[in-house]
Length: 163
Image (cartoon, rainbow, N blue to C red):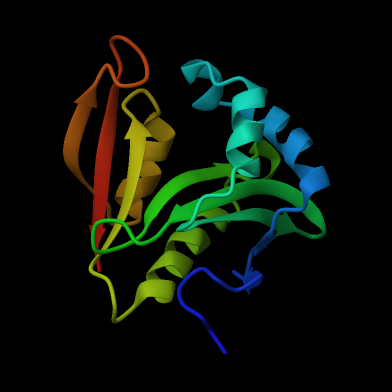
């Protein structure tokens, strides 16, 4: 019996699978994420990323991205949000990028809320050109600009994909 969107322990996405993050996987994953952009450029220390993964927060669903038995990233989704889920974090480690995992995550989010919600949401830094291009390809449009939110002279872009 499905309880609602994002509540299963595991999801097969095709190029990877999502599963609940094990406690002993959090610290090494946080270190790997802190070392790559945009988190490195934004100055997020691994301790903050680790605390984020360990924090229990109702309405937030956190998963490891598993490819061939190895953790290659993470996903955090907040639901409900503004008539649809908010992708709080999508981190695919460099060795696993370009393999369709990110697109599979976006497709999965849409399937999870099909027929019940109207939007998918994400926020991306203006300097993160690769992420901006990725989200455009996935059908997201810019809806708001948040200047100097995380860094002076940087803008966070709030994006929406209508379902």
